[in-house]
Length: 409
Image (spheres, rainbow, N blue to C red):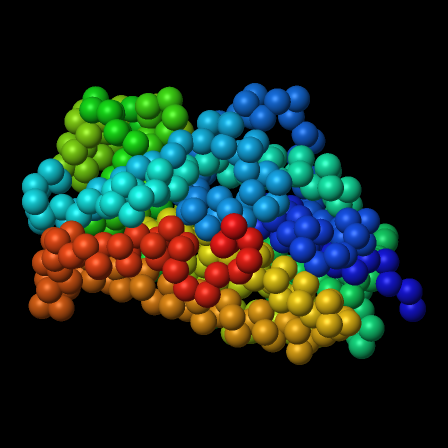
């Protein structure tokens, strides 16, 4: 049977669109041989600046910036309500926020202009959709209902229609339909926490700094926004989070000020409050015959380190590298032997980061006992060690580890 496309990407979010764009740029696959499928593909806005404000934001690392540049989307993202942050200020709930025991990372310490950029999910998606349209990548609004894999292609049933592709990439999020239909099992662990996301205005300026406090029962982060406001990500035991989500605004603000130790002064809620149940997911395998998973379809981590989107973008770039190398060698892009290279590469990197994030959550955000106390006392030591600080900053910025070509710039 004939093949309609070389690659079908399921999921028109930032990770799926970036994957498609990097394949066009790097692999030699013509844009017309790539299609992105999603149940909902937004119409392009007249201007990105007119997009409604999205409460879901990402802290994009330097590696992610380079990947999005390679995808021809960074100029639009950077020019639309993006906020660079120059410092990270981290402290544990048992110490004062502005004392010597707080841990401060400054981009200037490693000669960088900033540590990353805060950007809205909707802005990323709109900028990448515009880049995909410019590149000539096909966009199809449809829902995947069935998947069949055979020796020559994978076939996707899309309602009354079907298409065949040499490779199907599942970029359809944590509840991935592609993962389920391909029979790729995943291990899921509930953190017993819910994250509250909202926008606030603080009496003291955020100073282009990402602020984070480990609370003992969770984590509170203030992420700087370009208009002087902050986006908060407040991860708490679910029972307390649910109570705060419906609490009167003055009560919510009072609890927020208490948990932030008024590091930024009086705090006023300026948006609705959203909830995100927190859990960890790891696919037992990222690939099978003519199938590959990227982003949240393959792994979900706790948001306390802000690495979820960055890991997904590194997946996209690594898969593009592996496919480009295979195609140059004359191999089929859906060949499992190629896809296994991608799985070995990204699985090891993702599991290393997930283990580190879980350790932060277990020992710093919610820890008790001697080991947790030792870890909490270690924060000031990291601040006094130039070598340790540099290693931490470089890993957070995506400048360490085995990096794909697009992330190296």
